[in-house]
Length: 391
Image (cartoon, rainbow, N blue to C red; front, side, top):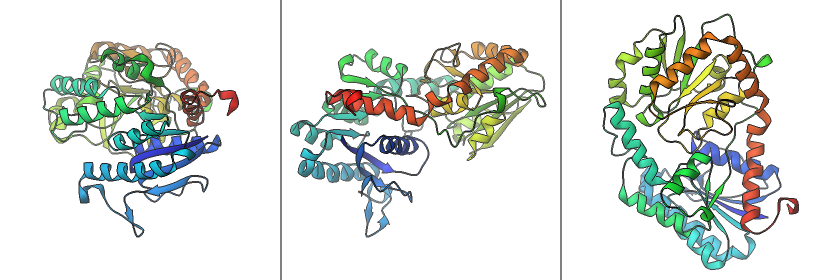
């Protein structure tokens, strides 16, 4: 099987670039032949079996997207990728394309009869924009106009054209799938796969037991804007009023958001760490992750925390993988009281906390990017009408 993988951004970064990189490495380990078109490798060296085309590199120098305009850079990437596909479509079994720079490529794929899958790392764009506006209103601020999830009818129309041109849209969680269906999307036009965690970067906690020589510790890891629900986490912390407990906040805070969080950031036990590069060490020394998101495709930090023995306390819109109450604890979006009750329960019951921690580490292999790659490979096989046994 030969896949054209189109990623209009730079690899070697956090966020969706990490997701794309792990997908590429996982597919390569499974023996899938990949032709990669990306903005640039970002200094990475990929296995030689992956054929690489960098669309924003000229004479060995990377051209930043902003230098020609971000959307223009995406269109350039799409144009380069589509030209190659038009000339080489007979060699490709599946096209796997990421948002904002794939409409022309998916159009050529459809014209030439090549199945085209469009990655959707978030729920339906209309759902994301609506939820992000609700999160900002809940926090009492306006979402910046340049925020990636700000309401933008031009972006929404463009992404809806991409959805329509794809053979299927790839969604990474049951929550994301449900949001597409609520927008009136045809279920037959969706394929659910999943994301994973780096099993080498996030080590297993010895014996899966929380530490007993320190106070109960919660961590929040994520972008510091209202969509991640930090204001809900801080309100839950105030309600729980846990003696000697700690809440560590890892992530840069959006300035106007930080201004309205000052009372919560001053609560006993709360420490804001700013951007943290070694998230694995945070999870290794924490009891729970709090992530009260308003919208997620499937937050990678949930899997990273769970596999590290740090119990995820997440909203129903965070896109976790597994069963609530067993693999993670869920609370309704915006419900600080429910999150506070979970914090209070686990802080007061070390045996329950330890059992959930051990269960998380028992799922490490299942949660890995290696297993996620198998799920993605099976989507490829399904869309070309093959079976996993034939791979």
